[in-house]
Image (cartoon, rainbow, N blue to C red; front, side, top):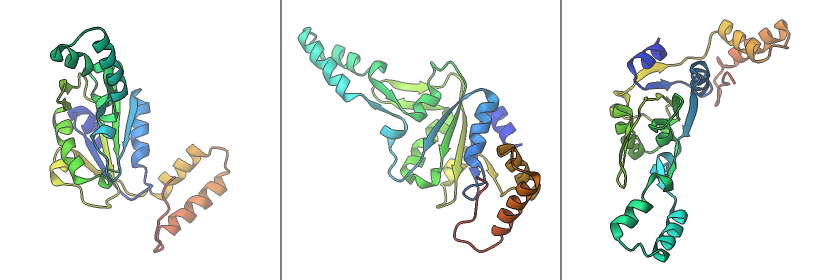
Length: 218
């Protein structure tokens, strides 16, 4: 239901749950079902704009500057327009997802947002609210067809309310015995029915024990 509403309302979907319940796999399954490109941004501490959104190809810009100088193009405005154009823009996952020149729909997976810094969360607010990104040298880039955005969190820290307000929310539990058995049969179709039931029962039992790391579905 939450996924259906996210598609219809064009709202981001925020998924929380224990590690290994299938949050990331859900994004891949949705992309396959929609015949869309899956664009994944793996979050980590210290993630910044140059790795998540865009950066300029400085080596090519420097080479182009030398060519402009050799050609006698000395006007600063002309040189700036030539150097800060899309030809020298390296598009990272967030910009790729809202690129107005995209020919296919996209599913943008922002994986483990709880591992990123709070400052990066703040940067995401414009993207999640308006599906646009501001590049000072070029202006504002707006998505012609907004991607489906799925954010995941393992709750290593609390995500800010400002980000949560822009999303629909879903907590994903570990699957029931029958559902997990169906997953095993789908993924390992050549395993015997008896073995599949035994393995599923063992994993379900292990989740009831106080372990440092509870076994996930994978």
